[in-house]
View 1 (cartoon, chains in turn red, brown):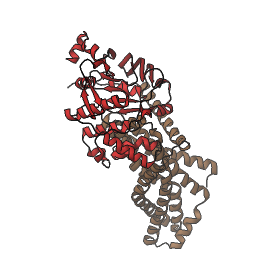
View 2 (view 1 turned 90 degrees about the vertical axis):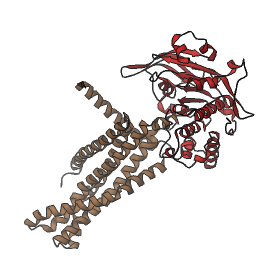
View 3 (view 1 turned 90 degrees about the horizontal axis):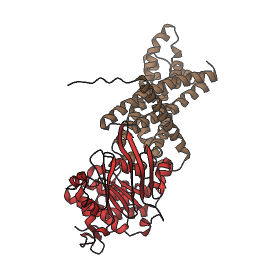
View 4 (view 1 turned 180 degrees about the horizontal axis):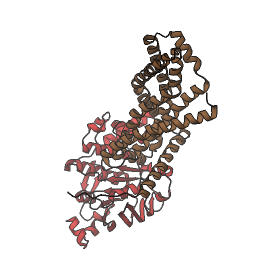
Length: 281
Length: 264
C-alpha cells in the first residue's frame, strides 16, 4: 500500500535532548480506590524508538500513557519525559511540556463541536500561528493521513478509522518529539489498520519520533518490527533478512500491574516465559 | 437476584462533601484568576454570551411579563380593600427590581444554562475531550470555564434589567387595563419609590447569580463520572445546586445590604 505524500521534513521535529531518554518510568505505582493498576514499574523509551505496550484489558496500559502525559499523577515513583520530571511539575508547567508531546486517544477524543480543520489546527491556533500558516500545515498533515477531503466535516460525519487518522493528524501537526498512541488500530478493519500502522512507521523512520504505542494487536507491532518506511517509493516495505535488529522497535508486556517483559523482537521471540509464549502464539 | 445493601459511613459522606466544596472553591477561584492571565478567549466568551444571553431572552421576556402581571394582580385586591390601589406601582417596582427580577431571571437561566454547561462539559469528560484539551497544552478552566463565567455574569446583568422592565410593563398592564389606574400615576409611583439601594441590590445580585450558575454548571460538568448516566446525573445536580445556592445567596446578600444601607 502506498502512503500519502510526506509533509516537509523538519529536522527540529526530531531534535532530541542531549542526554537521557525520551520517556523514563522509575518505580511508578498507581491505584484507583483499592485496585492497584501499576505497581513499581520501571522502563525507558530511547530517543527515536517506538515501544509497543501489551497487556490484557485493565492492565494499566492507557493509564501508563496518561501518566506520561501528566494527565494522571502516580501514587509513587518518578516519570521523566524529554528530560523533565513530569511528576514534579505543576499543571501549568505541564501545559508547556505537552506542546512537545502528541497523543492519540483510544476513542480519538476529537472535539465534536469543531470541524476537522479546527480539531487539527487546535494547538496551532492556541500558539497564535498565522491563519495562512495554519491552513498550509493543516492541509499538509491531512494530506499525510489521506483525509484532505474531510477538511470542513464534523467528526460525527467520519468513520471510526477516519476519526483515528484525524486524531493522528492533530497529534503530529506540531511535529512533536514524542508520540503516545492509545490503541490506534483498535476496532478497525485490517486495511485501515494497515494504513495507520504505515503512518506510525513513517513517523518513526522519517521523523525519528519516539513513540509509546499501546495495542492489543500483536500483528501490528510485528509488522512495525519487520518493516521500514522507504522514502523513495513512499511505502512501507519489509526489511531485508538479517536487518531486523536495525529497526528501533521494542516490546513491553504488562501483567498483574508489573512489567514482565521489556525487550526487542528477538528477545520476545526467544522468551521462555510460559505466559509470554502463550501471548505471542 | 440478591441485592446487597451497602451502608455509607456518615464520615465518608462528610469527607466527600468537604472535598466537593474544596474542588468547587478551587474551580471558582481559578475561573476568576484566569481573567488576569492570557489568553482570554474573547471569541469563546462572545459565543457563550450569545448562547446564554440571546438564547435566554424569550424565557426571560415571558417570565418577566408574567411575574410583574401576577404580582400586580395578586396585590391589587388587597390594596383595593384598603383603598390604596395607587400604591400598586410602588409594590411592583420594589418587588421586581430588588427581588423578583434578579431571582426569577437567575432561576430561569440556571434551569436553562447550568444544565447545558453540565451536560456539555460532562459529555466532553466522558469522551476524553477534556483530557485531549489538556494534552494539547490548553487549560480547560481557561478555555471552557472562564468564558462561561464571564458571559453568564455579564449577560444575566442585562437580562435582569430586561426582566425588571417587562415586569413593570406587566404590572402596568394589569393596573391600567383591569383596575383602571392612570398610566402616568403608575409610572410615577414606580419611579419615585426606587432609591439607590434598591437599584444597587437589583443589579449586584444578577452578577453573583451568574457567577454561581456558571461555576456550579461547569463544576458538575467537569466532575462527571460514569458515562452517559453520569452526564444525566450531573445535569440534574447542577440545576438543583445552582437554584438552591441562588436562593441562599439571595437571602444573605439582601440581609447584608440591609445591614450596610439600613432598613427602609
